[in-house]
Length: 166
Image 1 (cartoon, rainbow, N blue to C red):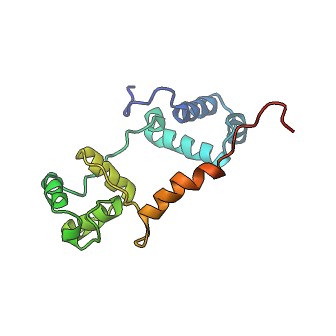
Image 2: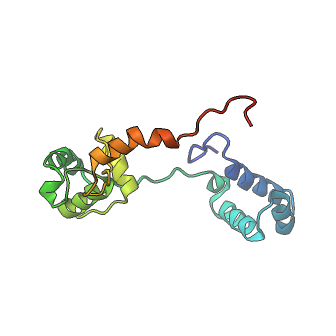
């Protein structure tokens, strides 16, 4: 009989299930099959039951069902328009988009929650990149930092030693 789902090349789990069924068909005991394949007796029992009810095809790897997208195509098409308004338009301090902020806008506008990782995937699909804000102290003195970098830092750096020097 033909396979229901197309196995991935080298799907060792599927091969293990099929081997368990083959050994069971040859009269092996579940305990011996489990020991030979390095699995629990319960796993062998489940595989044998599946094969008895649904035939050998039940042991093949089944294709994964894709989840339906939670944002519609129209909503995704609106995303660039929303992001072009800027982060400050949505009440964020600083006009920088982060994954967390984009996720908050998606939740507010469409009522759909996504993890920051998935928001990154959505942005990548739109050919947008999230931005990470540079956190610097507001009282930072750029002139003093530059002066320290030019005058003090060189004197702190390790000097090359002369060969043979004590």
